Amino acid sequence: MKNRVTGILLLLTALVTSCQTDDKAEVTPANTSVTSRLIGTDSIATGSFLGIPVHAEASLAYQAIQELQSKGVSYLNIVGNVSSDLEQLHNRIPLYSYILLDRNQGTDSGIQITLESGKVKSIYLNSGAKLTQWPSNSRPESSVRLGDNSGDLYEKFVRIKAQSSYGNKFERIMLLTKDISSSYDRVMAQSPQWYFVNKTGSLWDQIQVYLKDGRVNYIKVSHYKD
Image (cartoon, rainbow, N blue to C red; front, side):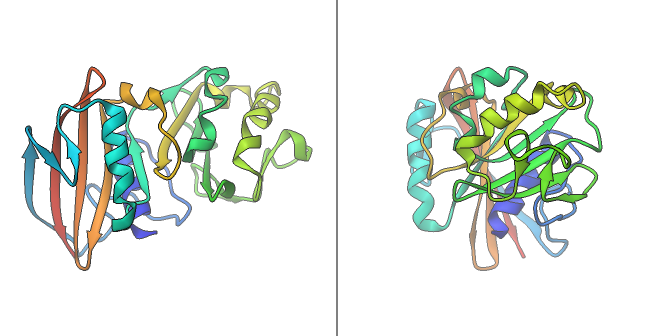
């Protein structure tokens, strides 16, 4: 869980988005622990790292990252995975575990939805307020509720968007964090960067996979120690 929270917070920092995760951890510049310190960095422009081949197509890189589940890696953060077209997200929403809905300029009332095991685990406003459903006064079929199946979210989003009070929350739909046990999303290849955290004891690495034209361009590894 710590790896997941660290990854989400690093992604939000990169996007300059002031939000909170389901653990309500505070966003910090490079990691979530004030005792962690950077001990070195590496940049890999040839070969591979953790089985992720440089210059490989994004789909093959994703397969390599999926193999890291045996090392405890569960989530992959996708930078710039933003859309304003809800219809295009119909089959993609269940592939992700962290979704942000908001106006283009960002508001305290933006919605953060965390999914786990195919169900809604938590709902927060950007202000940090914890919700059990959103919108709070809508009927079950027109609101997102704790325990909802991820496969039901698209139809619920369509109904919520049709409500004049909430339609503007779909100006910016961000699919931020991907559960790597789920299948590949080809739109991921358009992202400039993926990244995740790999932790072993008191040592942990932030692995940033930079993409260009749908292929891995290079990999940057930042080494930290708690």
